Image (tube, rainbow, N blue to C red; front, side, top):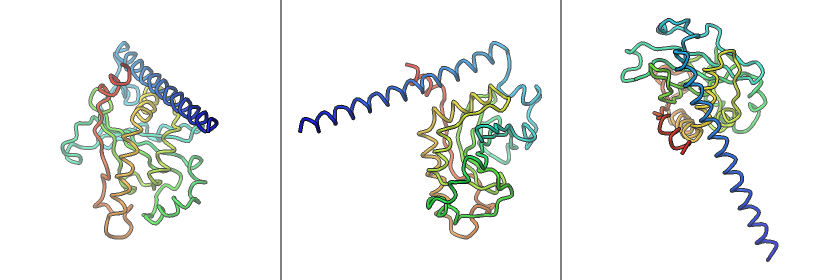
Length: 239
């Protein structure tokens, strides 16, 4: 009996220690994000200034042209803007599409989870990447939304919600665009709760769609979306 009580006490202590470590990591991430924007302000630069060479983004332009790729970690991204008519009501300046390269997910395709998810196959144009998440930014370069899109939008396939979340939890970026890399990393880490919900809603939308080849069906584009208030999240995190 005493051994059982002792075991329960140790488990509670480990749980508290784990929560404290997680909290400390979140605070460190929040501090890094704030420092990045403070440095941009001090230099009078926009988050995407160097990426766009100081120009306004061209609608449907792809920045950088060949994507920002971290060959070491296996993550990559690109930034672009839609026309206002294409996304009515959106307040974003543009958005980043975030991907995982083959090295991060190829072995997982043999899992029962991904074999089941593979039933949604729509025919990928690019078999070497899987789309993970899209992050919307306002005109000031501040993240304002998270959303997911269908596979035909980016020309590759996707992974199940659980596998996608597992990959995002280990995100590291060093693509040669340090400010953008830091912001993307930080948003993902700080918003993981929202991202998990977003991905679950994405999968629910896909599985509930009536008809075949759902990932290639152009009538289904935006799968799930979540507005985020980074000021509020950081304020809560840092106090």
